[in-house]
Structures are given as structure tokens and as C-alpha cells.
Length: 302
Image (cartoon, one colour):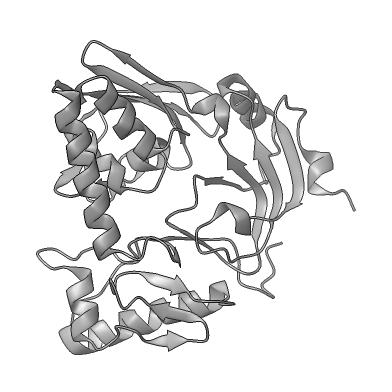
């Protein structure tokens, strides 16, 4: 039987079969990628899509801060964008960031160059590609407030410039399966010292209110309309609830934590329990914000 690796086209980046993904995700749980692909640049990514067999599924993985990888791992090819996708350029009042650039790095680079509007990104532990794809937001601001355009690679390997993108709460109108490779944002001139103080305040607030030093996945559930998920979870009596080593954070109960040897199944089961309890006590359904990727242990993906 031909292995998946043997079916894939030649690339200038790197393929790693049976790659351990635990080190790439904040929960530090989950099974391996059947094949992990780190493309060298945009052209390498396009060539891969143009030549790969159509039956091979593709999953994109960012910095792993808002992801739960199931214990059976991720079938097909998992793509992780590396240093070739992390450039940040500022021209006048415009900032261009590669999809692999860290949100916090973008916030600090903008501050250094006296460009306001980006400080909220210091409180979002992700990359700019994911931030655009899900219209990431925090501290009263969202990507849509500064977004101008983005460049994507489609599933057939073409590069497209996207200027008219609908950005809604934790969602975007970008084509299914497309990968953001870079994006352009508009800022406003401000004093660097003021921006650095904004960032310091955001970082301090985040450390005070969120379990940032724990193995977590960020906000587990989206806020329902006119409600806060953490309040509904607290009212449902779920704060501190455990399944094995998976626990609802005592500090911020819209965060799940791996306190030791939790499995992805433990964490997902805990999330499902929270959903049921909240629905029972408030009648409000909670929707997962964390992306759950891959298959459960023992599942057949063929």
C-alpha cells in the first residue's frame, strides 16, 4: 500500500510524516499529523495545491492557541506556515503582515512605528492569518476595525487578492479551505509611548483575568448575542468542574485547562458537559470557539 508521503508532490519546504503536534498546541494534547507540511513560501504552497491528489484532505494549523487536536490525530496533510510567512512591513499608515506573524509582534511593531489601532492584538495569542479568518477580537476591538485586504491561496493553488471580505463575530466570508498568506491593515498615527502603555495595560489585564500560564486553548465558547459565555458557565455551576485532568478554569470559566495528563477526549467531553449544563440552566446554546481538529482515537478516517 502506497504511503501518503509517496503520493505527495515534490516541494521546497519540508514534509514530516507522523509528526507530533502536541508541541505546537497550547493544550499539549492530541495525536499526530499523518503528514506535516511547512511550505517555504507562497509559490511552494501554490505548487503543492496544484499538484496534490484531490482526495488528500488538508488542515491548516496556526500557532495552536485556540485549537484542540483530537487523540486520533489529523489525517491527510497539516500545513503550518513558518518564517517565510511572518514578515511585517509598515508604509505610511498601512501595515502588511504575513499570516504567520504573531498578533503580539504586530501590536509591538505598530507601537514602535507610532501606528495606532493594533494594541488589542497584544491580548490575542495567535497569528495574523487566523486572526483574519476568524475576525479575532479582544478589549472592545476586532480585526474588522483595521482590515483593508488580504491575499489568499485557494484550494486549486491560485493566489487571490480579497478586498471585499465580510467580517462578522468570529467569522469571515473567505472561501472555504482557502489559506490567508498575508493581510493589509490601516492604522492611525499615535505616540509610541502611548501605544506601549496601552499594550502594557492589556497584557496586565489579561494576566490578571485569564489563566495565561496554564495549558489552555483560549476562549472555549463564543459569546451568545448580548450574553457573556463565562457568566452563563458560572451560573450553571461549572467553574472548577473536572473530568480527569481536564478542568474548567477557576480564574476564567470560559477557559478549559489541561492540569496534568488530560487527553483531548477529556477536554472535549468537559466542553460538551458545559454546553449541556448551560443549556439546561439558561436555555441558551453555546457554540464552540475552539477549533476541534482531527479524529477521535479508534475512529477510521479512510
